[in-house]
Image (cartoon, rainbow, N blue to C red; front, side, top):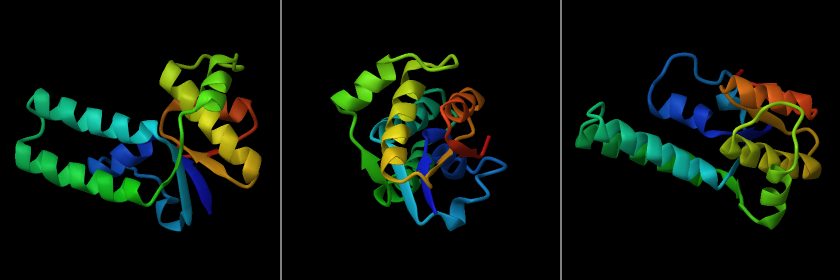
Length: 137
C-alpha cells in the first residue's frame, strides 16, 4: 500500500497520541514532502521550549521521528511542487498544506492507487476535493 503521509500522522505516532493511523502497519511505501522532517522536528523543539518535553524525552522522540522518516521516499520541494501549491485549490488551504497536497498530487500522477494519510481535517477535505482517497481523517 503506497501512502502519502503528512506530519500529523508521524507526530501522532512519535508523541504516543491516541488513535494513530489504523493503516500504518500496512504501508509498504510511504511518501512525504521534504517538509515533513522540518515540521516534525520543529514541533518537538517547540514542546521542549515550552517545557512539555525534557531533554532526554526530546532525544528519544526525535530519534523515533528520524527513524520513521528514514524509511520514507521524500518528494523534493521543487519548482513544480511550488508552482502547483501556488495555484487555486477547491477548498481553503494553508501554505504548508498546499505544498503537501501538491506533493501528493505529484506522487498520485505516477501511482493512481496512492492514498493520502492525514489527521488534518482541512487537508483531508482539500485532498478529497481534488480526487485523492484519504485515510486518517
